[in-house]
Image 1 (cartoon, rainbow, N blue to C red):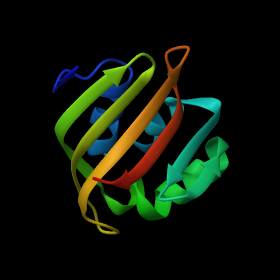
Image 2 (cartoon, rainbow, N blue to C red):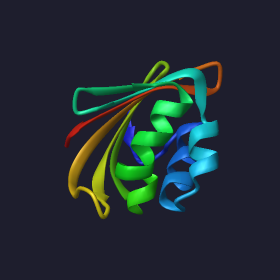
Image 3 (cartoon, rainbow, N blue to C red):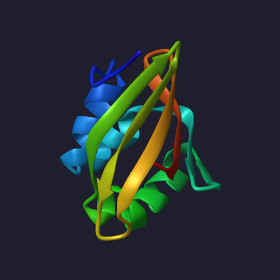
Image 4 (cartoon, helix red, strand yellow):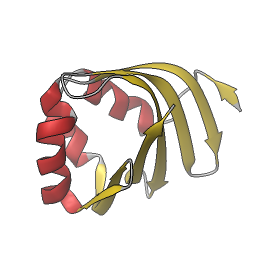
Length: 109
């Protein structure tokens, strides 16, 4: 399925990201959640927060969604990422577990 219908919890997560709501962003992850940012891996709330403070929420990032694909518990979102740290078309692959975010992989769009 490729359209702009984004399932939960990813739809809310993207709203939190674009609103720069760090607390809600961090709360969206499972306790052992992982961010893989272009091959650099951050596991657990403390590491994800440290990364996000510099490169994600802390850099005032926003994502304009262009494409969405859902395959089981995996949601892939492609869009235009804009922040004070990095800019450009990016692919975000989200893995959902028990209604929360288990993994977020970021790559070139």
